[in-house]
Length: 204
Length: 204
Image 1: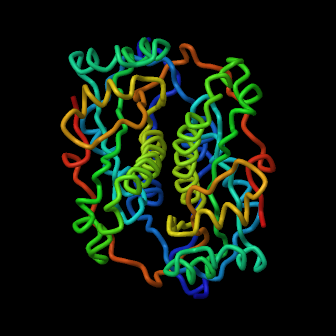
Image 2 (image 1 turned 135 degrees about the vertical axis):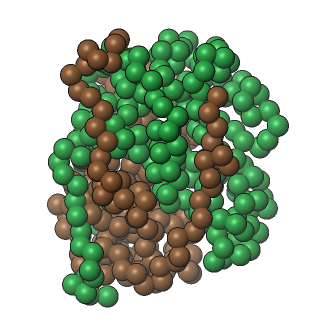
């Protein structure tokens, strides 16, 4: 199709928006006392859920840990260096994946009934769930920044412990954990270098 | 820290921007003939690279397949249902991960020398590389939309074949493949349903 026949054209966001989402955003290790309202967590999910996943399988599950009681269950399971900031953050999000996501595929992909059959092998499901829930973690991160929030992702925690504590009766497994709120500059590291285009990419 | 002492405040993006990034964006299966300039691919990488990864390890590698010669190497390795659209798209991006990403950690994380030692076990590296390169795929997807581009991600392809064809002499492995350009409405499916908040999330 000729591009000129389209009514919608490309529309890059402003430099300010790109800065907020990517170039000026920072992983936060300290948090202000401003709470995050449940309504904002709902809005965050409503954005995140639209990001693409394989067969629209949507394997990610999100546990928003806010109350002192829930924090007390999570914090001891974090790696020692992640405990204080997880305690301080107004919200900690356990990003997990449902290995049995395929059970909902008939409802999630109505135009292609039967794709559930591709996922009878648990190892196949496990790889797809891990990939796509991780993608959804990426979408959540940028969606949070789009809503004016900061994030601080962490993979240092007792995965078996979090599984047992938060997902004991299902085939849901934790992937990683992300602190969420309005960050402070406390314990902010200098921006670390990134790989250059030529180190990480090629055009063929 | 009291939130009121901060100079920068929360700043949600406009509804139009949120629509472009999430709620109105669609996975494209058809592509217009408008090319994507190499400069825009560089800009896309410069946004994507800033997304957070564990220990700033940045394991993702991106191969932008554009030329007819490179397309001819890739298209036969796609699942049959993904071939025509991959041929048609102006750019196909192989998102891969370097299982040996740890070799660059001393340079990428200068404030914490020695974390490379956490990754001597290849199975540990493999899991971290897969998780974090998938996150980076999520960042790339939203960054592309922020630049006015459309995406069409696919996981149906011959992974061993793509590894042998594009990454024969390294420990880099393909993760998934994403078509990129200015989409048309050709073969656009109706928007599939998503899980409700209560089906995918909980607040504790």
